[in-house]
Image (tube, rainbow, N blue to C red; front, side, top):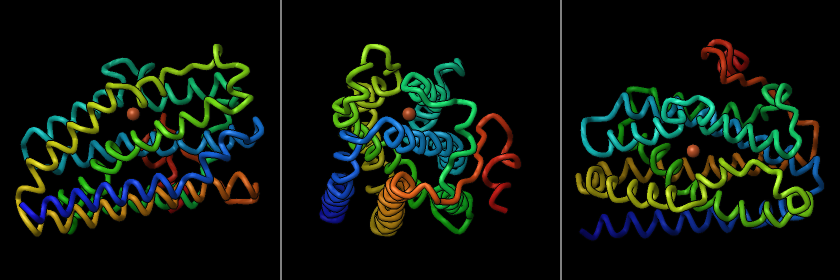
Length: 257
Ligand SMILES: [Fe+2]
């Protein structure tokens, strides 16, 4: 189907563009001093915190099928398969702690622009006027397919940073081992295959909505990292508090209201 081929070509191009757009950030991560590197890396924790409820919303809205079950599997993985100590935001915090981040202060360091953006994405996922094809483009596809490629490249540069190299053996790499390894590559390919079978194959309307979600997802992903980069360069950016341990009223949703 020509329409499907066009879509996947576009998805590949957009992904490549998004990753190459980040070259400056990546090379910065390679040379940044320990404080700047930490303040850069801390921000990604907020992305992992938002990802879990977003996938849950997507699963709640989808029709039955392999893609729905597969996203639920991803959700289970994200939650640590029954062990909260292995939930991905927790593993990411373990990584941050192992490179010297003050864990008890992290909740208050979220860049406000990014939390507003993540809240906006969540609002769209919940909005009954949006379709699930759009939601999959916005969160299912972007989160699974591109993050993996992006994180792998990011990781290549982080490990070259002198501060990280010095303490490499003491760093808790569990989060990274899960996200740059075979397991995640498999996830990315499987996500693509199921999106192809269950959404792209449904035809033009679904492809248009999937594409719209995906374009927005790539734009926000780039904006997310640009904001992070700007927050490291200028420490005067506004921050809000995000606490994953309390219900939504106590999170940034409340802080921004
Ligand atoms: Fe993850």
